[in-house]
Length: 155
Image (cartoon, rainbow, N blue to C red; front, side):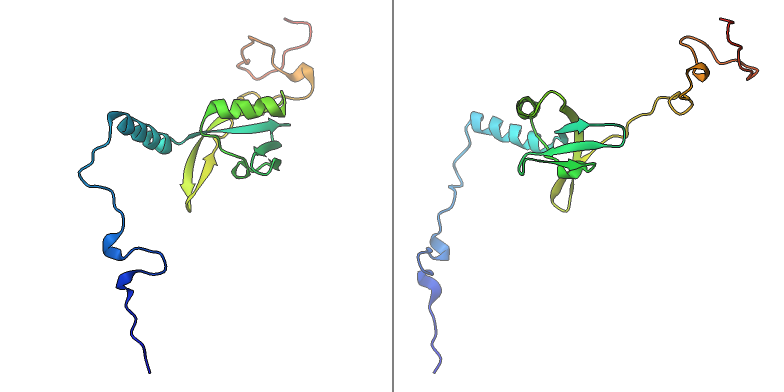
């Protein structure tokens, strides 16, 4: 024998569908509430975030993950994104002087906010510099047109 169930009375403590508490439609927000909502929406729309970084060299950087209190090597996605610079500076004060706060943009990937770092611009002469000091160009010197090396002793 099959029983028919009547769910119009609600299910274990839940009010029936017609009687659920709803926001009164005629109630308006105060100007302070509207300002606060606009500020929060602008905060969410702003892609600027801050990361804590300890750079050891050009190719080696540690990004701080505040939730687990660990550093993630060479992967900015593993670091904590701070919405406010003041919060990042407060955490930096606890970590030490070698930590830098960098500003980056962020975007959403699969519902998760991910940092987008700009590529570091390399100096134009950095690739052409040699470890030999004699072969490095002197400050203020223009490259010679003929491509000949200058002899030592001639200024």
